[in-house]
Length: 141
Image (cartoon, rainbow, N blue to C red):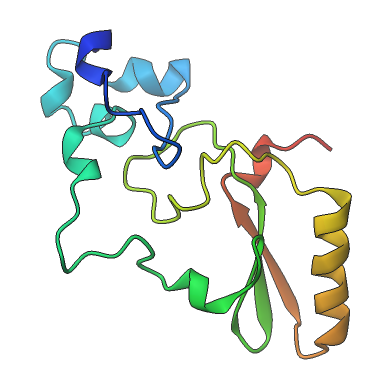
């Protein structure tokens, strides 16, 4: 679909989002001209995604302001967001959690989960835990 040379240099640092997709999703993309195909644009890295304008933010949702730990975000009084994994079946090029997703950390350790659970127990106003990441469905039972 795309040549290795066209991808070279686009994933050369630890902050780059990996290029990964499923065979089903890849089959939906236009193979004749992937650069102009909207489906292919969802998963094929492009140089423009590494160029940021002055007005753009690496943290567009301001998640870092609400981080309790590396995996727990407490933005709203009654709910927290648990980043269960940084892995996805398809790494979308428009991902707004690039600072976390694709970091190759995998599932949280028992120690990380202990911290998350302790925080939730200490904050009885938390009524809901949202599971996100990455894609929580990439985790095993």
